[in-house]
Image 1 (cartoon, one colour):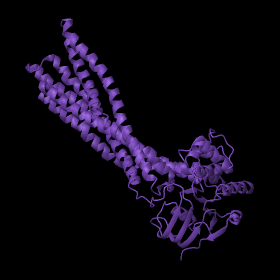
Image 2: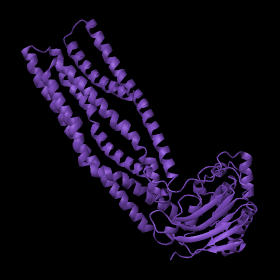
Image 3: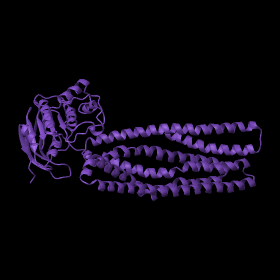
Image 4: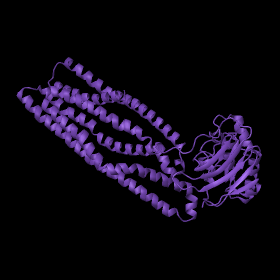
Length: 505
């Protein structure tokens, strides 16, 4: 439907020029006015139809494109949830799942439809003009092939490297902006802000140069298309003039031969941009395909929620853990945590504590040994993200089916006295450090998980806030196995025992 409407819109524009040319030429002969009513009505019909068909084509074309974009984005998020890509270059990843996914829309609306409709209109127009002047029709086909195929192809070749570079540069720029935005206070404190701003400026300069090169090529291509259109007009005038002189063409049809190519070439003038857009869109979609093609990580056999068990336990039997593509960082770890027991997993930074947690959660497979979990596992991340929405919606991330009462109960158990409807700002900007940690805890508690993994729950909190938070944690998990990853001596002392990780041999 979108293709048909695009053809009708472009065809109406060309027909409008052809009928208008005939009408003006015929009117110059001063015929009876009734002879002009039909073509005058056709001019109105094609003029209105051009706008109406283009509007409907935009509606139907964007409907198709947005449906494809929605499906692709859902597929991308589904794949991301099964991989470890979320921990890598978040700004670039954000650009992929937002800006790059939108390239499917450009491919449909700005590439496929313009090329398909223009090609069909060209064939129909050349066939119609061929009935009047075969020579003019052949010239029109030749110049249209130059303007609609050769010049866009050369423009695509000339700016291909720049167009292809724009997309990854955009992702690199997004990653740099993300790093600056998230770490601005630290960058200023350590004097690293100028270096990062210089890096940002360098990427922006490269991006601008790529865009300038693309624009320059497009300008040259536009000049070539104007030259091709002029060639078609002059050739039609020469060939048609000879036919009129020879008496094989009615004089009023000369204007049709001369002016119709102008309307057709106007439609072809957008194809250079379409060709360049195709390069950018395909580059962007290849970046999305890299996400879709990422190998799923983890067994996926431990869902975040499920039926409750009577005796939840966590058991590690000679576990060897490590991230895919890297050597194991933990080997031979055996550990059993019974219901109600709190065990601290300690060791220097980088020893593999968070890797063990990821293995317990099923995010990455065990390299060797076994992980046995009875009961659904809840995870309080060290850097749990607070979304720019209400307290209620942030808590429901732990259980999307939770009712108002369950949300309020989770907040109370987490010791957080905030209205559920309160907006927390970007990344929880309106919350204190303790409130943000308690909100993340409420997200875990609302899921009613039977096994808890807590990663640095007291980090960045003052002693009083940390003590109160642990009190609430312990009160809410007295019947659950709890694995605590921490460097905090006070928290280690409050656990039933501590297990220290040692470097792999």
